[in-house]
Image (cartoon, rainbow, N blue to C red):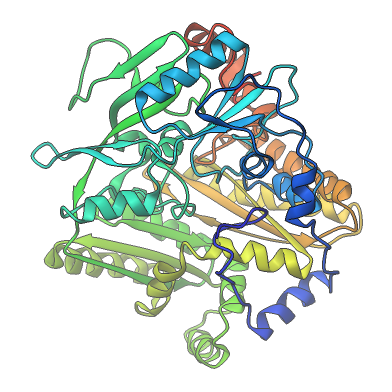
Length: 530
């Protein structure tokens, strides 16, 4: 069963080895185990629904509670404390386009706001109801999840937008294909959510971000249906797909999506190289990209993240032996790990691997084989479960991400981490911060930062501390020339910082566009733009 107040299946437990627990306690000090709210008690706080009856809309308290929040840190604080301030008044599970049209018409006629819901995995507040005099319904797309059409000759597949990552890949793999889109939330996030937030998968270097994969589809809006045909390319004016990508449910509900697919690779493998320091790793990555080599992933960790990764992994004897060997080769505490992957025909994998290792060697990189890469691949969708374990130990963890050009990247990492550290230092608290470059491009890179801290005594103070760290890091991103989001989207949490990137005229243009399709402003109000 899926957790109601945390990540994933409640039968999956991420157990930390004793050495990892000691590592965290040495960094942050011992913490207290929080007292979490009971589900039965939380259900009693759900207020009475404010909706006229509709055959597709459920109003029972448990269903509404399970759809009220996503996976952001403030969401966790509310759910774990039981102090949840807003709820949807009802939840609907459409099974067809006709059902979606019916629900939008019902909402339009009754003055109801709509929140489109995919997998509930947003970490920036996309699915949260805001305080409103108008009733709110959440439209859960999970039952619109089938493969509608597969055109093998054109490498196109059309799905219901509510399909989750595992179900999408299983349906494609049965025919010998893959979408190749693997965000960390893959286990629960949906195709519609990926499109609506401009998602990026862990192997985007090979397959591309979601905007490259999204070929067209159908969107039901308050003013009618918007059909987006699939073309290899078109010069017929502005591309209407772009107004759906990243629209975060503000102009309608994506019901079907046609996606560009790829044949399953004959071979896939992941490797690890350790560099003397982060600067050598960055230069090696830039050189690899400039050669045009075909890789499916490049992920470079800072020294702090490398140390943390090794400490949390356990296997003390094996990792200790490896670290001693690296030390003999001159790599010490500043060493940084690069994970990289290849897929495709075996002969091309071998050729690209050989040339990549040749480049990394020129920058002092030491290849340690496939073990670390294979472990990463095996556990990459299990890592989010660590949040549950850490919370129950008394530690909060959050992430943020950005992207900037290569000339800015090292400085951006330092500025973000310094801003977060300074915020907690000012109140006498420790925070452990580490970053990696998760998606790389010829012109620059994304930066993904994780910060770990002791939970405060009460939920209000936890939110105050989180908000201070989030604000400081976001201001550092803006002042250093980064985007406020590379792949998490905007939602509620990044909204205060968007105008710095888009400008006033840009925000007005986006707002006007949404109002063109949604004149009553009923679609997911408060998200992306006010």
